[in-house]
Image (cartoon, rainbow, N blue to C red):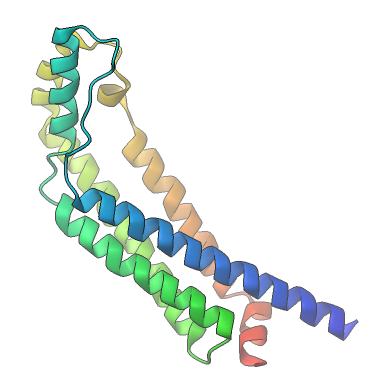
Length: 177
């Protein structure tokens, strides 16, 4: 029975380590993509020339957040900390829980900062956005609450990660190297 519980804890730790490393890898890729800038702003292929111009203007306005580069660079750093924490969990290193917890807290703080920055930016460009979107009454980009929803979902993921990292079985398994 004890051996079966130990195997279950080991599998749980391995999944958590893999999840942490994957979360970090995806975040680092997203941060690198955001650092590249506005290269991939395109209009819908079936849009009229006026709609295409309006779509590009709306996309450029949404991408003009002045905090974008700083948040993207910090996203890369936080995500690499998550990757490192995941690898340390896989090796059951003595400081693995400390690294993974701190990386998860940093990730959660980054999500809050990113969400607030995106929300504030939308408030600041609301008039310009409304003017540019006059030709796009049904545009999902203009009406979107995606930054808030996305921030809430990712924050829940980080909170789940923190709860799992503080679970007694995980602590016991990392300490039982």
